[in-house]
Amino acid sequence: MAELRAEGLVHVYRDGGVRALDGVDLAIAPGQRVALIGQNGSGKTTLVRHLNGLLRPTEGRVTVDATDAASLTVAQLASRVGLVFQDPDRQIFAGSVRAEVEFGPRNLGRSGSALGSAVADALAATGLVGEEETNPYDLGQSRRKLLAIASVLAMRTPVVVLDEPTTGQDARGVERVRAVVEGVAAEGRTVLAISHDMRFVAETFERIVVMRAGRIVGDGTPETVFGADAWEALRSTYLEPPLAAVLGDRFGMGSTPTDTSLIEALLA
Amino acid sequence: MTISLAGVGYRYAGATAPALLDVDLELRDGEVLGLVGASEAGKTTLCLVVSGLAPRTVGGQIRGAIRLDGEDVDAWPMHRISERVGIGFQNPATQLSQVTGSVFEEVAFGPMNLALPRDEVAERTWSALESLRIDTLAERDPVRLSGGQQQLVALAGLLAMRPEHLVLDEPTAQLDPAGTRLVADAIERLAADGASILVAEQKTDLLAAICSRVVVLDGGRVAQLGPAAEVLGDRRLRDLGVAEPSAVRLQRAAEAAGVHDARLSEALAGG
Image 1 (cartoon, each protein chain N blue to C red):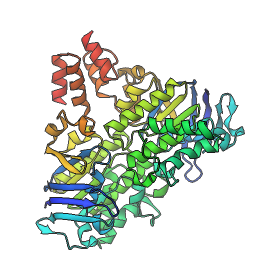
Image 2: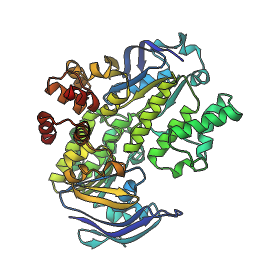
Image 3: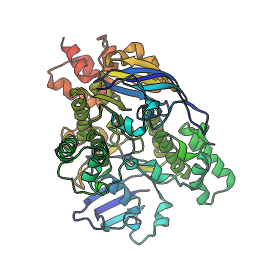
């Protein structure tokens, strides 16, 4: 279990002088399911790359369980925060699905039955059982993405960060990702996911953080963030509330961010 | 200006099973045809076949006939097809030329190779950049942009070519809702100018908005083909691994819960 905290976090990329993060304060309690939304270039990926030490702050700091991330090595951080990249091809390198999924937990010192069960659980969660000996590049793009997720799940880190996990997934793939998020959270681990899929976000996460131009401009439950009062903030970062939220407001039923909540309101 | 496929099958080199089987399809002048299906149903393969890259560049074996504006393209070399058919790949990193130092040069790269006059290259390049609202990125290095920005740059490069036929494999995968709308507008404008466009997408809300017809692939075969509203509203869609558009899904959920609400029906019918 780990608490994540960003304090006054600023990141300026060296090449452009762009303040990709412009003073971010965020605290995530252990076991929370948090979605990070915002337009392309709003700083979402830059923020999560600070959480596992891939980027170091220009100003401010990141703490994991009250320990300054700057005082931890990338390897120490990797045992606490697992990050799944947006593009699986930047992550995958092994010659078989099994070798790919084993790599992380092996590096954390797991072996024998602990390693076997970590790998088996991760493959089951991502629907890749039976593909152990397959070359990752013989899998389609969407299953390569699930493989990248499996590789991080197998490390059993207290925090799992997913960058655009539903991109390129078909209907079943999205359901699988949803089940992965819920499964990880049910074990008391923290999940932080970046997504542009508002329907998926509203249905899967308990807390939604909205970013614009390197700052947090919204933070709350799906009911709050997709409620009519918050639409202006959403639209300022070029996002739209889900259809159910728009209709709930039109019918005067308050905030109904999901199909289920709208239908319940209509039945009440 | 049509692309037609008759009895087309395709097998990747070394693969035991074909990736496409018995595909009959016509992509008409000025039409946006949506392409959906579960993962590994053959969507990307169909994009490669229609654009001529499979088998010419990718290898593998093809059967059946592909006609471009009535002419059989079987013996055509790749460069002859690419003058007429543009393709946008799923991963923009694959698309970018890697040989240009700025977004402007990257987008101008295609029209330059069409040997157009300088002024026209510049005009087409700015027009494509502005239509996707990335003109402010003109001086930036393409490889240092975010995934979503790269996707827009890759598409701008295709728009600047003003292709007669265009194949797009998940053109909005990495885009936020605003970027997705810009791409939708650009596709509609291109079709209004007479281009025929095949768009593979997971976002059925987008397809419902811009397509006249939709084709569903299942295991490499055409499972359904028809008017967009009909295909995307079909109850078998989810069994074929495709997420329904938001309005269809909400309608189904309401029916299943026994909700009969006139306002809801009206709102969903009105879009």
